[in-house]
Image (cartoon, rainbow, N blue to C red; front, top):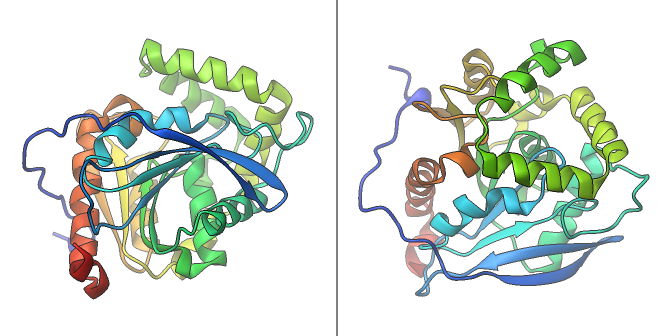
Length: 281
């Protein structure tokens, strides 16, 4: 079997949720970005995690995953400009993918974060890959959970069809979160951001991202088909694919324990091959 598409073992007891996070507000270039940070109960040498949310939603979307990853390493969940508690820019303006990536880089710089593990979901994968392309030293590991945008699905009708199917997989808690975040961001911004996502060519960036990378797809994800997930892993120079049985598109929110186990195992392995991380552990 192709080792790039290998499965990772999920061992050990289920981690308990982490302590309550603290809120921070920091400058990110022209913008002010709100974020949360979870710290592990004891000092660890593991690479810090930065969670990048998907289309229009906020960092709230990542809380279930953050709580489980934070049992062993620090976890940061920013609300990118225009979303969640990051009020900038003005409501009538939606930043393109490249500007959201620039804001992510600026926010990491402001917080002294480098050589992080970027863990992104859906449209957040497009932002994260753009950020790593611009600043290769930003991340030492990359995790793409249900990455968009499949080139075969860059049609509004096809996206609507997949989105309707995906809605049927969502829990009530996720639906309430999405309604709140969409209303907070504003429908005009949501529509323009979606248009930016449609026109973004993530597949052109992937071959240039030479870092350990894990692609995760839930087998019940109607938005990200298996063929596209495998292509993403193949395009990444050091990519591998992990399939989560029964998981959906919002694996970070709906299947956080299953996802956390896979992500943590991958990051532990990456850290173990890094002499600096081994020495700090």
